[in-house]
Amino acid sequence: MKKKIVFLIRSLNYGGAERQLVTLVKALDREYFDVTILCFYAGDSLSLDKNLQDSNISIIYLKKQGRWHLFGFFRRLVQHLHRIHPDILHGYGGTPNLLTIFLKPFFPSTRMVWGLRNSDTDSNFYDWLGRLILQLECLLSSFADLIIINSYAGQASYLTHGFPSDKMMVISNGIDIELFQPDLEARTKVRSQWGISENTILIGLVGRLDSRKDHPTFLKAAALLCEDNQNVHFVCVGSGSENYAHELDELAHHLGISEKVIWAKARADMPAIYNALDIAASSSYTEGFPNVIGEAMACGIPCVVTDVGDSAWIVGDTDVVVPPKTPLALKTAMKKLIENLALNGCDRTQIRQRIIDKFSVAQLVLTTEATILSLCHESFSK
Image 1: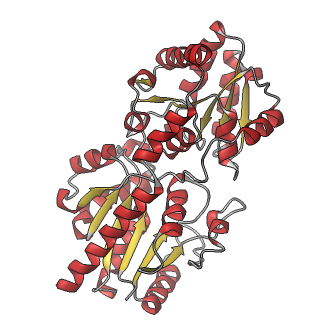
Image 2: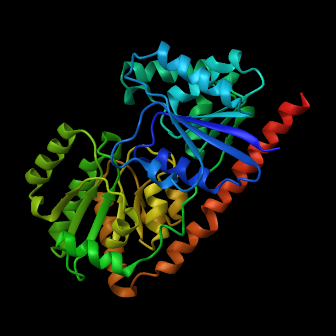
């Protein structure tokens, strides 16, 4: 008999956790799993629900009207779950995770699984509601049947906050190596759109406009690099706060590199974006498992990263790992990589192979399926 699994998430708007969920559910074996996704909110124009149109996966929008739309939303959620009667309810993120615990009395036979996607548990990163959610997660984590986290750095962080070690396991993100792969035609097309010649070095930072991605360090490193090399341009790809975007644009102007920096909104054709780059950079000062590094490497693009989260483990090369918040170190690593590219070229195959070997979707799915089936078996045994 198929196991019914329901994933609970805020939305399917474009983002790292959302992409991982879509990647996972598309690959789960339909012979063993009946999958439903419950979303608090409908998606925007870049919503990933379009990627599931031909997958026969049911997506239900709970029509939450805002932060304080609680009772009607909760009633609708309970009604849908009563109809589905899932074997597994899998939360994705803080509020969905907490809801699984509040739903336990209504669904005593359903196994409640938490999905943790962050590695930072520093309350300074959150507003008052975020801090409250984190405190509640710490308080209620022992009531979850299983806690899946996507990074070893995140596991270590949550353990310091009292999360139960016997209920936690790491399942690293999976990178879709069929979607993310070298594509010379796409490279040429995107670089042409941006006005970047083939002999110009293009370094990109892909990630939402969020202070934790530390765009200022990237821009400062870019300015230092321009002092040594004028044949280099930079692109920041991602959407976010307009105020933050304005601050970053002003910083680029202050650093004298405005004409060297391209600002691009989040796009659906991310494989093409990665292929347009010569180097991908991650300047974050906190991370879990940064998908952008794995996706860029799957396209054969060398990466320079800060030593946060599981970034160093993903790249597997200490020469391109630098401390966070150190523009000079980031600049030095980028310069060294440019020099290596000029001397030895880029072995895209080797870069891509690490993702194939360590972080494929097949590995993600195999581990997740085994974990879910084991959890269901434990429930049946009890």
